[in-house]
Each structure stands twice: as C-alpha cells, then as structure tokens.
Length: 123
Length: 187
Figure 1: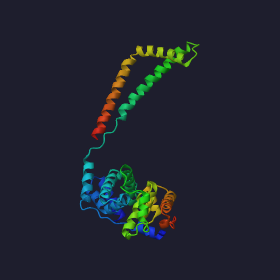
Figure 2: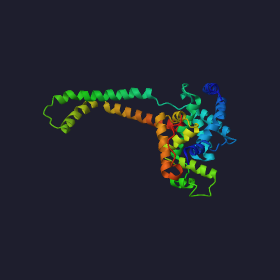
Figure 3: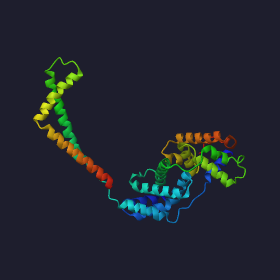
Figure 4: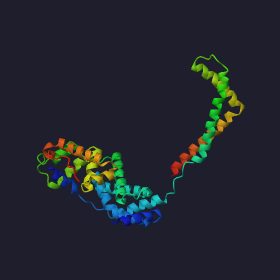
C-alpha cells in the first residue's frame, strides 16, 4: 500500500446521514437543558467575612501569647515551648468566650456545607 | 452555510431564540455526525456523540470568541467531546495486530476492497488515542494540518509529529502493506 492509496482510503470514508429524528432529539435535549434554572452560585460573600473573622481570631490568639512566652526564658525544646504557649492562649480564649465563638463559626460552616451540598444536588 | 448565518443565529440563541439553534444543528449535523463516526465507527453511537456535542456547544455558546470561524469552534468542541466520550467508553475494535492482519490482503485474500478499506480505517481507530485523533482529523479536514491542529487545539508541529508517528506505528506493524508509507508533509 503506497501513501496515495492510504490517503485515498482515509479520505473517502463512508458518509453517513443523520437519522430522521436526530434534529428533533437534539432540540428536545437543548430545550430541556434551557428549562433548567441557572445554577445557584456558592455564597462567597457570606463565607468570606466569616473566614476573615476566623483569621483575625487566630492571629490575635497567637500574637497575644508571644509576650507571655517571651517572659519565660530557658524553655529548651519545641515541645516545651508548645506546652507553655498553649496555656496563655487558652486563658485568653476563655476570657473572651472563644469557645462560644468557635461553636458559632463551626455551626455556620456546617450550615454552609449542607446548603452547598443540597444546592449541588438540585442543580 | 454562511459565516454570517452562524453568527446571526448565535446572536439570536443568546437572545433566547432557540429556533435559531435548530438552524445551526440543521446546518452542522452532517459534519458532526460524520466526524463522530470516524472516531467510533458505529452509526448509532455517532448520533449519540453528535447530540452530546451539540448540547455542549449550546451550553458553551457564550464562549465562542468571534476571532475564529464558528465551524472551527464547533469542531473543537465536538473533538474534545468525542475524545472524552471514547476515553469513557472505548470504541469496540479488534486489537491493532489483528486488524492489520485483516487489512493485509495476502493473509486474507478473500477480502473485498471495501472490507479491506474498512479494516485499514479500523486499524487507525485502534491506534493510541493521540495518533488516532491526529490521523482522523487530518483526513476529516481534507488533509489540512492547520484544520486538524485547530480542532485539536494543538500546534501544527505537534500534529505533524503525531501524524508521522501514527503512520510509523502502522508501517512497523504491517511492513508489507505500509512499508512505503512515510510522513507526507502535506500543505
């Protein structure tokens, strides 16, 4: 088989005609698709402020613990420094009701995840 | 089928007139079904694949940037759709070696020309996907490398290399048939 013959075989492939109901079938699918309401977008505007609050709370807790840690020199290991740095964080957190804030944020996050899942199923 | 017809109909579809999309389907159903058939070699499946491609085109109609012809965009969508479809459900074909043996008239002398031609096309369908796609689109676009490259969203050089490699595989597998087949730098 020479290249010309190969070209000829490949170029003159069988031509097939659309089935009689093809156009109707495509348009039915398109109309069904057009009838579906637009997808609900994920509410980033609601989520972003909460994320921001999270970040601020975390940053405040961490930076608030540094001065206390600095006042306790001679802590040699990383594990030791962890133990010491967590204690003031917990004290401070307890002072401004961090537990309740965390609970509220967690419940908001769960609500958002459930809503997003439901919206995904419906669309 | 004019360029303006497509452009006007797309505008109408985007404005909410679905009957304009019906005209687009009517104009392009033949080429899209035939391209699908070249990928899957099955009449019924080709219709299903083409329908899926039209639906994808409808959903993505806003994504057609008018710097390229509507047909270029449509073939690109369809090619992508067909490749994905074949990755999900591969075309029913025999192993490449078996097909090439069938295509070899000396091993199957009773085979008529149409049967042998069909075996050669099936052999192309059985090539690894990237070589198969390049060969199918090259011949679908009347041996136009630029057209094949646009449909595949690949540089022309890559398509040329894949055409060469695809032919090389066919030639290696069946030297007595495709021995003379070399990359033809067409157009």
